[in-house]
Length: 118
Image 1: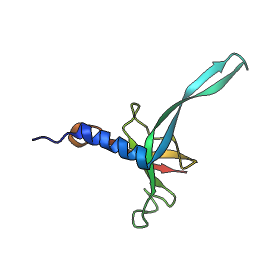
Image 2: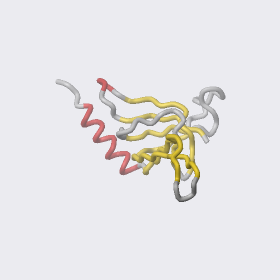
Image 3: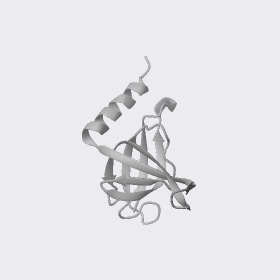
């Protein structure tokens, strides 16, 4: 008997929708010319998904890899994979993505575990 990890992903999304909030990921994608102003404007792509944010425990903060104020965001498996440097809007705070880990048992993406920093 095999475990249905796709079903686990569906359950994860249901739980994140029920107990979490919408998380917005922003990515700078270069510049675009704006003919109305005659200038180049920063182009930004935006992605959303449900997630939950948590503070690291004191024993996880090492002052090097994990700093005071860093947070963990558990994010549903959205279609566009977040990348280091993306902006993450969570709890009305704009944070920056520091590291990303895919939770992918049996090579099936279930959720993302993001480390974010102000």
